[in-house]
Amino acid sequence: MSYWYPRRWWRRCLYPPWYGWSPQHYPPYPYPAYPPISPEEELKMLEEYKRNLEDELKDIEEELKGVEARIEELRRITKK
Image (cartoon, rainbow, N blue to C red; front, top):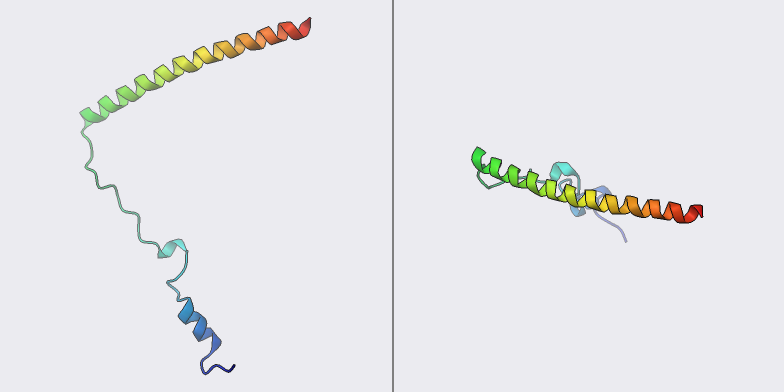
């Protein structure tokens, strides 16, 4: 089968330069559409977040104590 057009030209028609997955061809990422929060609201959110982290820390410390107790128990069992 003979082609009347160059093969490179055909490839460019099938896959033009703007067709591809390179990052330069993606549209820019839009900034968030929500309005900025006030300092008072941010302070409330951060205080609540801190309380939640402290609660999680207490739970983790309790779990750690249980794990340490089990480790000691297993060490005593294996020494016998």
